[in-house]
Structures are given as C-alpha cells and as structure tokens.
Image: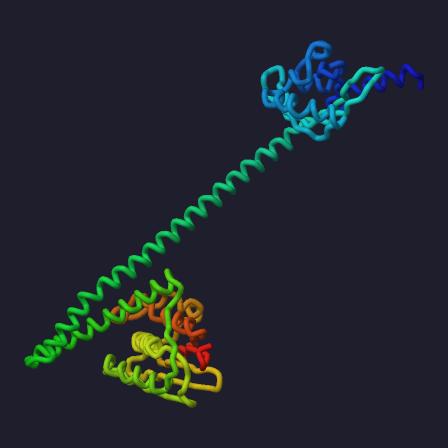
Length: 377
C-alpha cells in the first residue's frame, strides 16, 4: 500500500469516524472538523472551519460554562474528560454531546483536539433520573407532612379526651352526692331501685373517665404514675374482688391465692387492674359461669390473673388485644365500651416494670395474666 493510499484512508477514517472529531485554535475557532460532526450540527465544513468557534454552537448555558469552567480547566489541566454540553443544530434544536479534549502545541501553536459523542440516551436517562428523584422527594415530603398532621390530630384528640374527661367529673360528683343524700332519706319502694341505678350509672361513668384520663396520660405524657409500697397482695386483691362482687351481683367472682402475700406495688393501681380485667371478663365471658381471680406470689415475682369461660378471643386478634380501642366493638351492645380497659392494664403492668399476656381457647377459656417483680424493681 502506497503512502498516498494510506493518507487517503486516514482522511476517510477521520471524516467518517463514529464520533465528532474537531481541532480548534486556542480561542476556540475550528481549524478542522469531520463530516460526522458537521452532520450532527447541520452545518457544512466551510461554514465552520475558520469561521465559527466551538462556543458559538453551544446553548447560552453552555457558553457560560465554556467561559467559566471549560477554558480555564483546559489551560490548567491540559485535558478534560466526559463533559456534557448541549450544541445547537442549525434548525434550533439541541443535541446533547459528551466531549473529551486535549490541549497541545503543534509547530509552536496551541490547539485543542476534541472528540464528541451524541448522548441522547444518556441525556434522557439523566432527565428521567432527575424527575424520578424530584417525584420521590415530593412523595417523601408529602408523607412527612401527613405524618406530622396525623400526629398533631392524634395529640389534639388525646388532649381533648383529657380535658373533657376532667370537666365531666364535676357534674358526676354532684350526681353521686345527690344520690347519696337521697339514699340517706326516706324513699318509697319504687324510688330505691331508681336511685340505685343512678348511682351505678354514675360509678360506671366515673370509671370510664378514670380510664380516659389514664389513657391520655399514657399516650400524651410519660406513662402512668404509680406509688409503690409494701402490701399484702392477697388481701389487696380480695378487697378488690369484694367490691366487684357488689358491682356485678349477678356474676360469681371467685378469688384463689398461692404463696406468701408480701410484695411491693401500688395498691390502687392493682385494684384498677383487677377491676378492668374482671369487667372485661364479665362483658365477654359466659354469663352463667364464674370469673376466677388468682393472686400468686413466688420468690422473685408475683402474678395477678383473671379467667373466664365463653367465646374465645380469635388468634388473629390476640397480638393487638392490649392496644387501645380494639375489642369493645365486638362485645354485645350492652357491654360495649371505648375499649381502654386492657390498654390501661398493660400500662399499669408496664409502670411496675412488668408485663401482661393472654391465652384463649375453646377448651381452656380466656386468661389474662399480669406479671410483676415482687420487690418492685
């Protein structure tokens, strides 16, 4: 192969290379371009060589970048790799290109040799990536806004429960005092049952208010407060059972005990725990079957349990049975409540450093157990 043929082949390769090849002067004027680049920008060679600068073909943003970054970096580093710039076609459309450039001297003259690659797929990918990121950021921001809004609404609702519950105590106290005064006087046989019903209704309302206030304290505050002292567990539970027997005269409530009774706990909170568990057993258990309350003391712990027979708790409901407002809706209409009793039981056990659990089945019935450290540690 002759030298002339080699030169022709080199020229053909340069002109038809699958990338844009250019040489510019130090000021950016084209001194050589291949046919590939000319086709990409829609301009003939004679319109570019010696007539236009590289930066003249860039968008406004590209020209600013060329002035502030491209030219200074090329002078300092001597080369630039994989810089994406948008070129303007003759028809006004833009062509994204990735450029590599090398600055060198040829015959004492500074020139820049450049290779360009059309990056439409890459540009499309980058734009989609930016849009996806913006959508994701918008979704995260919306989720955070909804979360904050939900927390604010929940907090407001819980605070309102506390406020309303507190304000209801005054009129209920007046009702209780009124029924007590009526009961101390002379009542006809027809009046006595009515006064007794009013008194029981006021007591139920007071217990409900107490649960609502405890719920607010547990959810909005730092948890239920307890005042521990040395107590006899069996006697404390027996007193609570005796009081509950008067509240539920149509139900048999038994008390079983095991072990020595000395332990450390808040006696009032334990009575509340027993009351809530017995109320739950009465509401959901078999009416004709007894409710059994057990108090068990071992060397390092003590336990309070309440057992009832009747329809078992479904297995799928048991993991959430101690959450607020979960079981009351399934109770008979007459026994429905706001569903805070078992939640309060869990919080009382938690405040003592203990825990609660439930077991329920068609054969063994339903048993709620609360476990506590014996010395209150």
